[in-house]
Image (tube, rainbow, N blue to C red; front, side):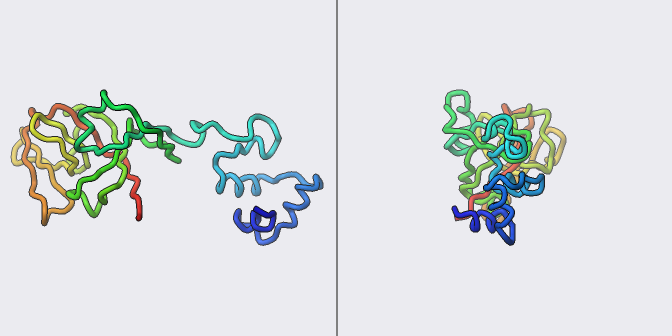
Length: 190
């Protein structure tokens, strides 16, 4: 990348200041360091400003690191203890989640398109809050749905986003063996 192209890439109209820095005539300002690290978050701001420390930040400094499992949340979350992560996802913001998996279900489209990555936080069955999305596990089913209150206190209604094609599921609270709250989504646009 040329200095002129780099200047345009980080949002500068001209590259003159960059040429002066390269020649050693000027130092890097905080504004320039912020522009660079906004485009290249792996670069250490401290290193840019002072030359101290490492040029590249540790990945844990760039956000929250979460294990990513290259499999479907509905079909494979019940076997999570048997699975090995395929890699890690580094989230730019702190998201309270334990793991990330694909959502291959069509039931949650369009709010969660098929092929999206869901960020999941394991919660106990007693911590389920109606109105939020969960992967619900019971002896009979494992499904990703919006949880709603049931007709009485002992039941929950599991609702798909696509209610025209998918029926609600009524489930006794006592039948739930485990649950993962959806704390975020990474929607992949193809």
